[in-house]
Image 1 (tube, helix red, strand yellow):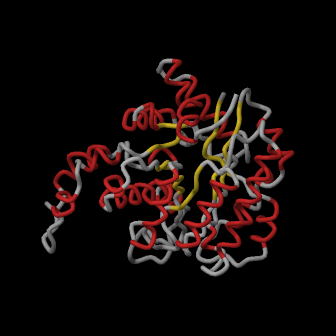
Image 2 (image 1 turned 90 degrees about the vertical axis):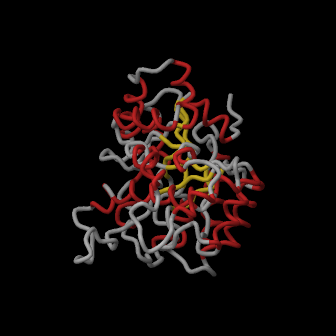
Image 3 (image 1 turned 90 degrees about the horizontal axis):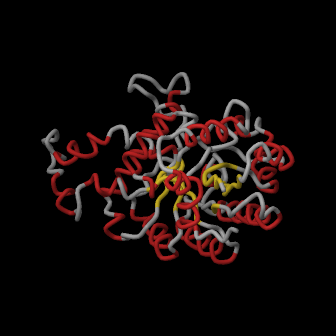
Length: 337
């Protein structure tokens, strides 16, 4: 079985509500309204039928809940989203092996409550957050209870990059050009999130926490020389403060913590990227995901290309099985035939 653990869907009720809400600081609504299989299940299932023994574990796409509503209204939106996803899983158990809950991250207390409700009551296999919360880093103390709750429930936390054109590439400009905020900005967002979690001591505080990073850990595998011996010299380039204090607070080298993250195979058909990611994280930390339906074909392209990359990869069949389904079954506690 091929279990796609990072793909996107809109429950109908949430989608209809989203269309009438103003978008706060993101520009993704136009993109998501042009992809029929995000909403139309007949279209989606026809795409899925192209692939043998293929099931999905869907989550909501951008925009984040917190980009659509203030802290008072975002909890209700998260409930609508999660109720809708749970209903789809219950209605189509042969298509969806589970769902990933959305959270109102601009209201951390409500997010903790929604984690509890979505996982214990609705059967979510985990929860999703984004690499920032309306521009705020997730190593701020306000968000710590969210990580604590995920560790307590032994449920994975999926992390999706979020950045728009309003984050300029140069200080003299006001916007990023040519959609490079997405091409290069999203891997950077993911990598910065991971590094901030490392230096915040998340893995020391919660040694068994499971964090799944999108797009094979962003830039981390390719830059392992910098995250390894590079960060071992933290502080060597800074005169105004002593950064070595952060290394002394950690129980391990930074590199060892980076390897504790999980990562998915959503690299849009790049076999070289998958090989690099596997070499860094190891086969037990990598899970099959396509990022469908955001390919040029609006559904099948990334699924097909990711499978092609994995099927020709020079690894054992046992390791290929781990990536396709074994790791997902173990990590998500899936009850599948």
